[in-house]
Amino acid sequence: MRVAIVIEHFAQSRGGVEACAVRVVWELLKRGNDVSIVCRTAEPPLPPGATVTSVSAPRFWQPLRLLVFSRKAEQATARGFDIVHSFSRTRHQQIYRAGGGSHATYMQQVYRHPSLQRSLSPRHRAILHVEEAVFGDPTQLIQCVSRRVAHEIATGYGVAPERLAVVYNGVDTERFHPERRDSEREKLRRELGLGEPVALFVGTGFRRKGLDRAIRGLAASGAAASLLVAGRGDARPYRQLAQELGVASRTHFLGQRADVESLHAAADLLVMPTRYDPFANAVLEGMASGLAVATTPENGVSELIEHGRNGLIYANDFAPAFSQLANPDELSSIGAAARRTAERFSWAHHTDQLLELYAKVRT
Image (tube, rainbow, N blue to C red; front, side, top):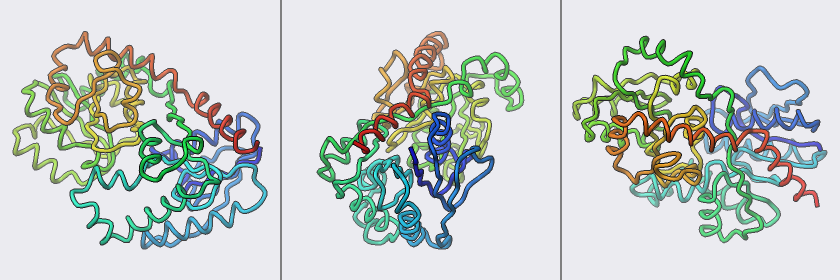
């Protein structure tokens, strides 16, 4: 098949949706498909055999950039493809990956005054404009990264069930592997000066991901533990919160790290107290690493977790998660079960499901 993958930034290093697009392109090429990447920027190394079509869009204002990129991507994919599969917020394609879930639901979950945000923010209005157009177009299929996302779109926009396909994200089970604990755990813990049990938080967008809940949980638990924080975001208010709660010396802000798999090896627990997440890749990566993970019901990946067996689920009080650090044998058992769950979600399996969806479009 001739497949166009539309993604604003084609870059493994960005993580999230960008890393997903990179893995899908590699897997499609392995299966002999003719793949074109339609993007604004592409980061090397590029997959051998893929064609890259770069389109321009203004950098200076996100709402305009989003709308211009959508129009340019439509022009670039107007002819010559069997499948146009968009990973970005674009108006015209055959398959739209709703990796961000429903933006309307996101606003309800994250903002105290969502209607005010919508009226004042051109960014939110532009995203909602594209979302409403795509979900209202009966010719497009919607790839949902969790059942939660499918439900949000069906109920919020009246999208028919036959247009919604749930395809969970994949995970690199070789990069994220429990064996790293044997080779990397003690070295990294020495480098970071860690002796006590360690919880790990990984995420960009600290408020949405619930970093404040994690810090409050550490303080309320009274656990003799440390919290590692990795990811992009303004750390200043969270440093201040840790200081106020008396856990500043045990809360370590590491910034964005390329060696997240090594952080997993050093940790005893991964915490993701997110307020809204269609499907947090960081949690599935933690599971693949054999870590016990703790997250909220608002995270789509929680659909793969049975509390107390292969992970932990809490509403907003994460003190019990940190208290679990006193039970290393139990956490180890949960982590082993988490690894077995993650092994079912390889990128090869993910791409098999996408090819079934492509076949549905072509029939």
